[in-house]
Length: 566
Image 1 (cartoon, helix red, strand yellow):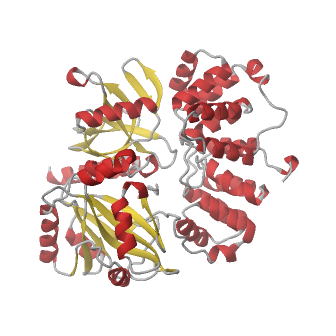
Image 2 (cartoon, helix red, strand yellow):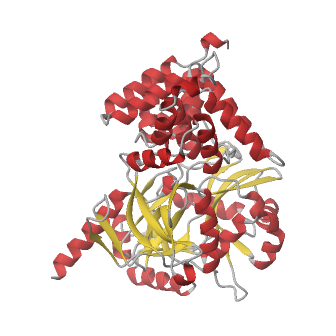
């Protein structure tokens, strides 16, 4: 494709600006649909990915690994600005991209000298992202910085705003994947349900959009799973008690132990095995013994399976979740970690086997097929019951063994990728925790003075994409975890103000609390009372965090119960 035929990056930025300035659903999807129609086939996936705040497709394991320190260094060098200006702009806007825009716009004369004659194109930006991601080894940081600088040197102030947003993964236009699916459906006249199903199977709406552009509805309808291409898993909804579960599932259900481990997606083809986390990250190297187990035991040539990996102590009881997460973080010491923290695999579903998708089969049939092919790998412990007393005993047994509770599965339920619904229900014996994102931190006092150990916790606003603070806590982490968290938060810091830092929303933590109160202290109008971090959710990203809408629902339910008791 020649220069004249390539779509300018500026055109994509104009769409992003429009998405940020209107909340009208139909207008937003129509604008994106019109834009996608104008693109060449090979531009569609990069454009969709970038509009959703990603440099690469969702399934792609490559990452840019560009720190805020590197980005800020480039911005300072190109603008020649006083960093206090950036801090002031960030405080005013609350958006690192908007603050970058202000910095670049305030020095147009200095910037003009660095611009090339040709404007950036969508494909050029993707190619530079690829070069950044592929820069590894000795000298990689300097090479990444040079590539980032070459990209920003050619960018207009508004392009710089969105380049920063894409690089740090914080687009915040409020244009979700669901709306993108609707826009793709409109753009290429492919039924929405077909687009949604294809997105689930391929794991990426950008790829589906490109197929729609190139080949149309027929090719989209014929898509099947690809081994080694992870997809979003089926999710469970919370249930208050087992009576609710039996009622919802028609009087009879399958109950499985809900293990306190890491959910994994296992892909096997011949002798090759890859393992993906719940976030679709490749964690194969972290679990060498599981790779060997799957290679040895699974009785089909090709398969996609789901299971749970748990760490076990010397007494055979499950270790806390954070011990398992050490396995996922320390690749350099993995064989020592295999000895220190042994893990066990329990399978609970099969999605694909020897060329055939099994997602439309009823749960009981999938479970039967899984038993046939699992070899010596155990399945999660299960009972099928219509008896409330038996169900209660099974729950007590799960808790006594150190598990979190139970998962109830409707007997005739299909496997619905990426969807949280009532086909699967979670039952726990504790107050429902929240998965929240750390958006800021302060240095502690006394023994904790060396660490960023007071954490601002935020929930995700589904409409705006903003992370709204719902509380603050210094409780729950060990000294070792606080020290490591301090290092991670410094790397993610966007602004430092004395003893406090504002950080990019990257780290998810599980939080328990006594209750949720109304509070004018935070923008959302609520605050968690006696919040405490129970674990760092390495298996979740900010997009998986609980929503502010969920926090409101819990608050209202809690208020109703209090009203009934008073």
